[in-house]
Image (cartoon, rainbow, N blue to C red):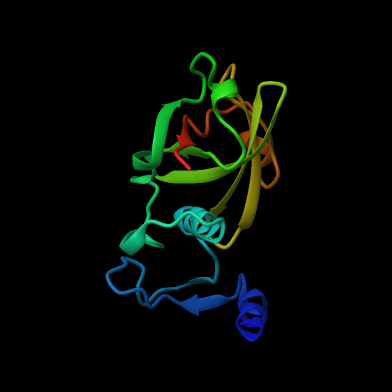
Length: 151
């Protein structure tokens, strides 16, 4: 296992050929990384959340089946979500890692090889307050919903 992890991190970000059966990117060379749903699936699986045959087959479109989905700006959302819950928008998902002063801090990945990104969003305005890899995203709407998971 240690060898696998060392090789995994050694190759992170390097160009690799996609070999996922049925994927629209199969055969293309892309940076070796996790996409958003891969990161969230990995996080949930390693955190002990199991879903039988569905393990590692979750997508950004079906996470809402695992808890209460609500707008990131809905009343009392700040009090209803906790670290480990999910932040969502059409086609993208991340994990809420902390909350402070009516802001949610969300960890997420993209399949483009950019690595981990940390985005802070206001639950009052729905706007990005801070973004670790894309400072020009500040002031924009990004994640639109949260999913309070049924752990």
